Length: 484
Image (tube, rainbow, N blue to C red; front, side, top):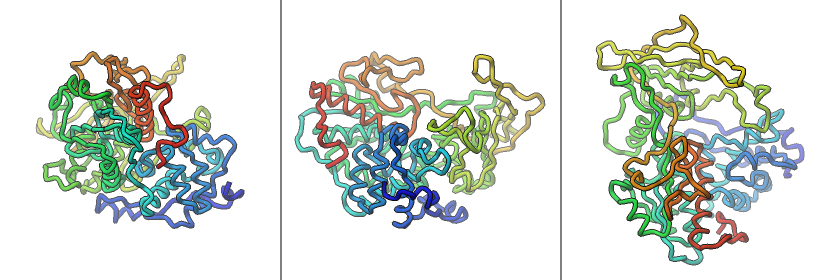
């Protein structure tokens, strides 16, 4: 423990951001760089508690007290080594992870949690600036070939691990650029694509091959791919979006959120294409999660006249409720940077039908207020509030209400892959019902967060490595995968 009274001496403090007026004029990252003094103070707040619940809350099991201690002592190289021992891509999680570790921080019981995400991001940026981050070149080759389908965080983590173990890796991506959700789902103002490209460049130097614009099942026969490789790993996302099939859904101006975000991300990347025009439009975002928040920030940068966000569920409390004790994930109201930039937010709102003044283009949405009543079984039942319906006038609607399962049609639907009740791929130890075929990430567990996706990639890589080497424990335990 670096400073015994650090958690009492220093308040939680994060770096400044550009003003709202400035940052909505561009799509670049807008969080300013913090000082070394600020980082040392924030790391000093870590209590090095006897049972660090942050470990268990983090799907990767990051060594958080260890790298906090190293930062406090200004041993940045050691902090970097602790960080990459468990996390392949801290530059991603340090920017877009919801930080479950902070939700379980012991200090958070009666104070503000340690700024773990900020410290994590600072460590990896220091490592890149210092030239410590190198391609992960394996010590020896195994002669085994592995095909990975999908270049999102799960696929990249799986590839990173397996390549370091000595296997030859080819990643197949149906989009024109690698990165999956990181490339086309996350706006640049949250994750600048130069950060992603920096990591992809290192992976290419480690001789990981990327084959983009390749849709398995259309461009390549899945059976042939399995035959020509020693293992194939499905790491695609849960890409079938939940829709809202109510009256008026066919009117022009109603879009799935990911279609909107993908188009704008491509436009920001320099692609010449027609995207959704938000300038001087009244925008309605249906869905209160991170994707909805990204639609808000993107709409404001595109010059929207107004942005309103509605959510079916109740408004979360400002602080933990009695039935949501620490160290569980705090179900509290969260205000993102996009919310700060301008939006109206409403909760307990159900969408009844879409309206059109001319029978073609969207002109409004009929909504109704609801309440959630707890039944004897403990489950909550939604009830519409009588005479509470009204019309919201809007020009565009973005549906950000989640994803239901992965897309297998046209990819591996011809194979006898068993699915679970939610239409995710069913696995046993990450192996599917098809020989040599593995699955991980959203395709296996459903829609989740980036840190869990990376964890899935690491875990499936371990299983594939054991399968290829036919060993019960083929991992070199003396050298963690992340360290060189």
